[in-house]
Length: 394
Image 1: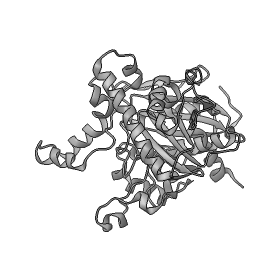
Image 2 (image 1 turned 180 degrees about the horizontal axis):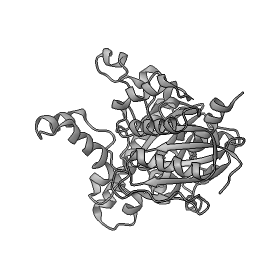
Image 3 (image 1 turned 120 degrees about the vertical axis):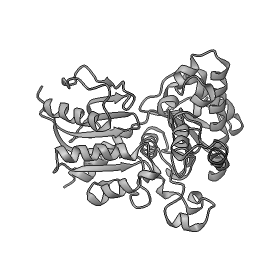
Image 4 (image 1 turned 60 degrees about the horizontal axis):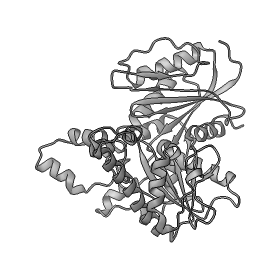
């Protein structure tokens, strides 16, 4: 299969998956091919590739991230794609990497230094960067950071109330899902008459979940903090957790740091509450009372934290759903809007029954004091645009 178009490769290496997309380098918003590998590290890797994809050949079921990325790069090269630059999602950029940038040895070293702050993500992001560099040493690579969007937050919003020396060493609230928020802000600005509302709360709801408060499109507060464990209840992560609980696990239960980390990363959240699944789709279809309780808790926490962010903004003009759950679950949206009635949300059941698209879908009535929307996020599109800007300009 021959491909004459020059393309940008976008790689999003997650904790158990690798998503990729090829974008036309002359028109970064145009997607030529996309796919993903899931179940990495579980011994049962699955591939999700479109019919028009080249023949990548078999991938071992026990492949790790490095194996999977090598397999992907080999298949793309054999398929004849002319890749001119690669853009990566990197979860944590810390305080030094507060904007998308070209990757060099210094940037790579900083991403590695930040691994303790994002152990489930940065190592895999780094594995993808190094795999590309090993195969194509001269190819430009760009890192786009989930933390960068939140660099506009005031110091008061980022402080932890611990001795100041820890803050000076980089221990602070960072916030995540920044590429998703950046995408939604751009789409709201283009799609709403009058542009982006002055005071907006965006809910990125998926296996990972967070809320972000925006004043004139800038992040001023968010529910995730020092790590992606904080804030809302997630698929397998607990969200807001009393630090004393961690001490209890250490001192009374005899658990070590690795065991505690595994529990907080993989056994908590919706899975921990229900004992059934961390997948909202499974829970919605389940009649078990434990599944209903997990859903109740998920929605309760969203509503409660929205109140906190509304206070940080001094009021709220719009609430926006995005992410896999936010874009597709009419039931979760309806439950959350019911909880936001005190802010003036009046759901439109017909509109709420629709799936989100690339343009804002208003799911409240025309008379609703609070405007609520659903919209599809496009993190890959943001990465492609930043990669074209930084790697191909001039």
